[in-house]
Length: 84
Image 1 (cartoon, helix red, strand yellow):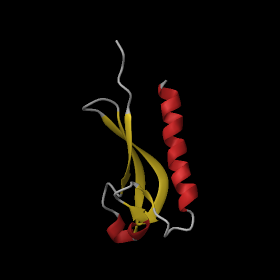
Image 2 (cartoon, one colour):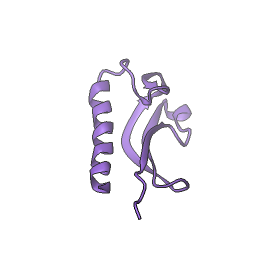
Image 3 (cartoon, helix red, strand yellow):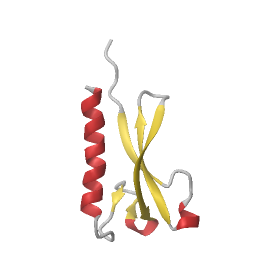
Image 4 (cartoon, helix red, strand yellow):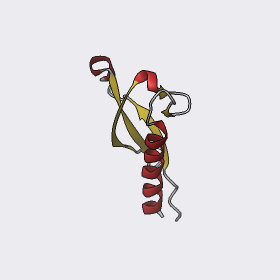
């Protein structure tokens, strides 16, 4: 039996703590199958104004947005490599 490939998506401020601190945690949401999901912290915090909710990535208002987005992509790539 072939196991389905996991799906990934970045989630901003899942626990709604950005209101008190001004910055929200970015987490990687992993759907293992249709009902099981897990969250992996990226340990990166950004203000809401620097998060693009539509594209699910840090926008160009953050001076390190390229490095941050590459870090998130690398995390996904490492998990996908492990999954194979």
